[in-house]
Length: 146
Length: 145
Image (cartoon, rainbow over all chains, first blue to last red; front, side, top):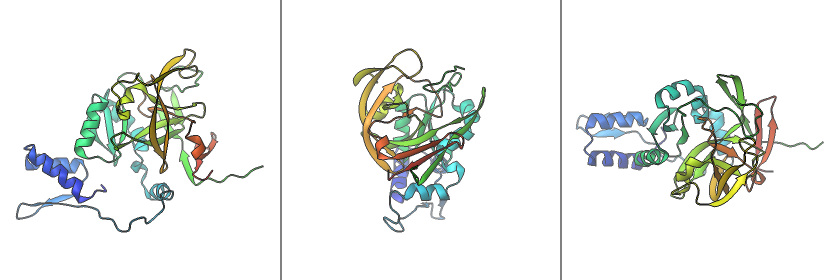
C-alpha cells in the first residue's frame, strides 16, 4: 500500500493511546496493507514509501500512467463489479470504503463510514453502498423496468 | 468530417445481472469534501443529465446536515414519468486529474452498488471532450477539447 511513514505512525500512536494490544495493532496494519516486522528489541518497524522525484510527470499524464501500469484490481470500480456477489453477501445494507482491492471500512451509515475512513487515515477511498434488497439496474431514461 | 483525438479510454463495465449481461458507461470521480478529504464515487456517464446528480443520502459528503437544504427544483426526466424533487449545491469534483467546481444536485435515486449518481453536463462537460462508442463499449475522453 503506498503510504508515508508519518500518517502510519500517527495511526499507530493513536491505536496505542486507545489501549489497543500489540496483536490487534499488527492485525490492523495487515488490514491496511502496511508491511511490518518486530525487532528483537520489541520495536515495530513499518515499510514506507518516499518521494523519488517531485513533479516527475504532469498531472494530465498521471491517470494514463497509472492505468497503463495498474492491475485490473487496482481500479476499485472494477474490483467491486467483479466481487459484487460476495460483497452483497457480506455487507448487505452497509456503506463500504474500498482501497487497494480490499474493503478497508464498513458501516451502516455514511457518516459512520466517513468517521472510520478519517480515523484510519485512508486516502481517497472508493465509497459505495450495498443495497439490502434487489438491485435496480434501470437507468435514467430506461424504457424497461426490472 | 472532423477528426478528434482522445488520450483516455474508459471501458464500459460489464455486469452479470439477474436479467442478463449488461454494460454500463460508468466513471469514477473524486469528490473533494469541504474538509478537504477526498472520496472516489462511481457515476453513470449521462449526457442527458443537465447537472451532475448524486443520490440524496450522500449529503454528508457535501458537509450538509440534511439533503434538502439547498436550492430546490424538480427534475422532469430522472427516474421516469414522475417529476422528482432535487436540491442544488456547489461542490468540487475531480475527473482524470482535473478539478472542477460545479453545481451538484441531490436527488432520490435507486440504490445500486455500482453507481451513486449521474455524471452530468453543466460546468463539467465543457472541461473535457467526450466520444461515446456503444458498440465498442467505450467512452473516449480528452483533457484538451
